[in-house]
Every structure is written in C-alpha cells, then in structure tokens.
Amino acid sequence: MKRLLPAIVLVSLAAPLLAHAADLNAGLEARVREAFADAPEMISISKCESGYRQFAPDGSVLRGGPGGRYVGLFQIDQPLHAAWAASLGFDILTVEGNIGYARHLYDAKGTKPWGCAPAAAAPAAAAPASAVTRDLRLGMVDAQVMALQRLLNAKGFTIAASGPGSPGSETMRFGALTLDAVRRFQCAKGIVCEGDPMTTGYGRVGPRTRAALSLIGG
Image (cartoon, rainbow, N blue to C red; front, side, top):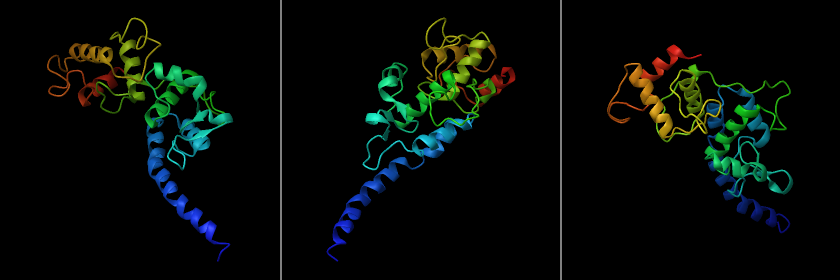
C-alpha cells in the first residue's frame, strides 16, 4: 500500500486539472467545423495540430514546438504571427482569434502554413458570395463577413477604396465601412433605406438582404 500511495495522490491532484481543461475545450471541435464548413482540410489540420484543443491540462494556452512557440487550436507560430494577427484584430491566444487568424492564413496561403496539411489539400479558394447564409451585423468577426465584403466590392458597393476592406483586402470584421456598404446595397435594392439595425434592419444582413445577395452571388 505504501508504494501505491504516491500514485493515488498524483491522480487525485491531476483530476481537477484534467477536468478543467476538458471543460475549456468542450465544444471547440464544433466551432472549428462551423468556421471551416467550406474548407474541410482545415478541420483535419486542427485535429492533427491540436486535437481540437485551445487549452492545456493546466488551463493555459496549448503550446507546442520548440520553446512552445506554436499556440492553440491551429498551433499558430506566435513569434512569427502574433503582432500581425493583432494588427488585424485577432488575438491568437483566444479561441476566436486563433480560429479567425487561421481563416485569414488559409484565405491568403491555403494550407501551406501547416505541417499537418493533407497531402492532397487544394489551394485556398475564396468563399463564394452565395455562402452568406447567416445574419451578419456590426461588430461581428466571421468568415462570412469576408464573403459579404467580396460580394459588395464586386458589385459596386465598395467597402473602401484602399486598405482593409478594399477589393483584394477584404477582412472578416463587420465595421462601420461594411455597415455603410450594406446600407447602400439595401437602399439600391429597395429593401430598407431608413431606421437602424435593431428596428428596421437597416445596416444588418438579415433574411431579405441575404436573399437579395444570393440573386447576384456567385
């Protein structure tokens, strides 16, 4: 019994930590699958890189590689990418930021940034405009916001003339410029031309706006 006691004590101490990590990582596979429903190779990459985990057993951010430089669900190289990701509005130490910046990398470079990329992975492809299948509103950060911006830019409802949001530099952030472009689109299509996102839906991409977008998508 004396030889077994240390092992029992260690298991007792470790159990709360393991349970805490499991709670923190619960549901993350579903979030990855939702974010990359149009890019199944990225779902496989997250499984390979982290097992769909953002957090280590002690509750800290999951780290891997030399010196723990790779972080989170997509094991993003923190020294290489953290500053640039932050400039785009992504904190790669958070679930949302790790997924969001992984999407940015995928849209820009395909699966090349990941060593676990499937051998037959296809190069990155822009999400089709018709992929705007959920309601979007001011303040959201979502892959479908990028699809929305691409569509609006392509159809003459330009987000910005240059910089973030401009043609070829679309982002996943629904900010004031995207709001303005959505409103111009809604007015032009006779959907709504007054009020606000909460009352009339002016500036919010709801069912009627999504239906109008789908008519000119592709």
